[in-house]
Image (cartoon, one colour):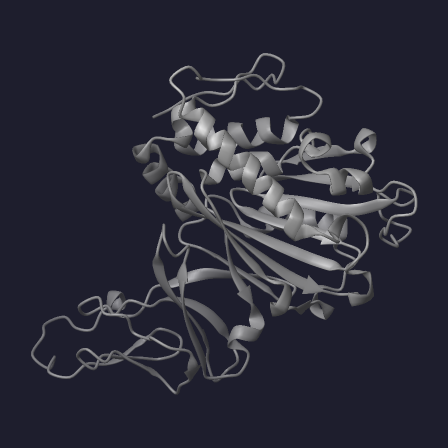
Length: 359
């Protein structure tokens, strides 16, 4: 299905309701959007030592692509397909330290760089091996200690990440430490796109988030758009915890309580004075989504202050409202809505990208 979003937000209508309810559109989005965009892998600690192997599934429950991080003896980190090029078995089934990779089905061996090494009982096979007998390698990119990959990226990683670097590149990401005790997984009975579009506007804050509204100056809340994402700037009310911004920051002199970056289609990088909350939105079905909250703490003494102090409550409030919207868009009496030109620029921007990728 194709649909269009008028580039003039004053004239535009939101996507047709079936975008959030139709299974064929959902399946199309997996291939046309999620298989062609950058996705979160994790922190480089998961494959830190030479010889490390770390199998993982890219977007388990939707794309479900078996992948493998390896760090070879030359200390090069790679992302490989974890599917044996013989009969499709998983090559590596648990993390560890290995000298090479060996498929336990028929014994095919690969180097930690994915290169084919040997295969028993193939002496009489003609024109063997070829390049296709090695494990395919995916692009693997790093931002500080954070790793990202893509099956077939529609744009470069640098283009995707540049707005974050330009705005908060002064933050020492390598000093941020993952706090597993604060990590959360939320299951939301709503389409992944509804969850994202809710995140992309501060319009609902006074109506849905009393505690967040008390910390942020709604009148100063603003959104900036980029080719592959957007930034929402949360300005603090008096007395709240804010960033100590460097003199060359474009926001110097402004009491910034939070930088809310969204990178198409499903990555949210929420910077607070205490550190970073990475939110990864993972589609599980046409009306089912998992959201991972991954906290990386820089200044633990600030965890209980300001806009980033009660994220679990804010998430549950968002969860309740988008689940209500999911029930609403199933209505036979609802088709499309309109936008607030002053408050929904981020959501309008997202919808235009959504339409472009699905076309």
